[in-house]
Length: 379
Image 1 (tube, rainbow, N blue to C red):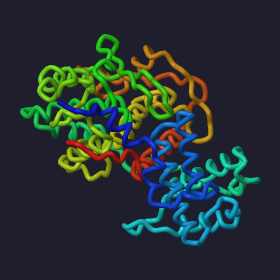
Image 2: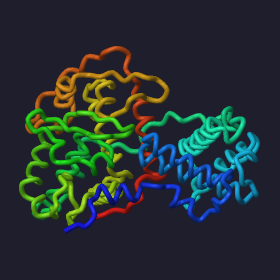
Image 3: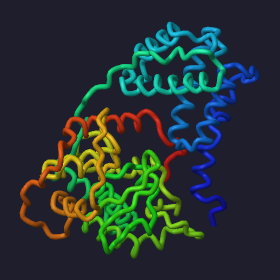
Image 4: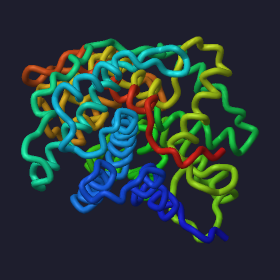
C-alpha cells in the first residue's frame, strides 16, 4: 500500500521552492537578493501561481543571484540597468554542455522572470525604481515545428507496442490518446478515469496550462484502446487505495511528465522514424494532420488549449459538439472505420495563421526541453 499519494508527492516536490535552490545561499540580509527572492516566491504561491511557473522563476532567479554574487552584488538596490544589460549579454554568450547556445525563447523567459521580480520589489517599496522596466527583450522567432510525423509514420509508431504484453496494451492506449487529443505530457499524466466521457466522446483536461479546464474530443479508436486497457490491464496495475489516475506504471504509480516522455520516445525510436521528440512530437502531429485535412485553425487552437497565439488574442469559445464533429472528420483516428475525405471545414472569422500556431507549439517544446517537472520518471 502506498504511504503517500501521488498528488502529495508532486505537491511536496513543488512546494516551498525558496528552501530548495536558495538554501545554499546566505539569506541572512533581509534586504539582500536571496531573502527578497524568497519573499517574491512566497508571494507568488499566495497569489496561486502554478507550481510550474514558480519552479521556473525560482531557477531563473537563482541563476541570476549566483551571477550577481560572483560580482559582489548582494542587494537589489545595487542592480542597475547596465548591470542587467551585462547579464543579458552573458545569457546570449552562454553555451550549454553540448556547446549549443540558449535559444532566444529561453533567454526571453529568464529576462521576463527578472522583470517580474523587480516589478514586485518596486510595488513592495524595497527599491525606488525598476531597472528592468525598459530592458529590451530578444525578439522571438517565428519557427515551424522541429519535427512532425506524417500519418503513415504516426501509424508506424502506434504499431510498435507488443499487444501480447499488458504493458504494450497500456502503451498503445497511451499513444492513441496523445495522438488523438494532442494533450500536453503533464495533462496526459494527470488524466483520471472519470475525465473520459465515453458517451459523448470527450475528454476533460483539468487545470491545464494557465489553470484552465477544457473539454476536447477524443477519437473512437483511442477510446477503443483505452477501454481495452481499463478492462484488461489497469486492474492488474492498480495499487490500493486507487486514486483514479488513468495511466499507471508497471509499479502501480502515476506517470511523471518525464515518465510519459520516456514511454513515448522509446516507441518513436523503435519505429525507425528518424525524427526527435516524444509527447510534443505527437502534439505537433495532431495539429498538423487536422489542419492538412481541412480543420480550421480556431478549432485546433481550442484542442491545444491555447488562449492566445503570440501577441494576437484570437481565442473564441466554440461548441464542443461542433469541435467533436471537426475532430471526427479531420483526424485519421477519429473513427474506427475510414470514411471518404470531407470537404474543408468552413472558416469562421480571420483565423490564426499556421505559422503562429506552430510557433507557439515550438515555444512550448522549448519550455519542456529547458526544464519542467523534476520529480523523476517512472516506468
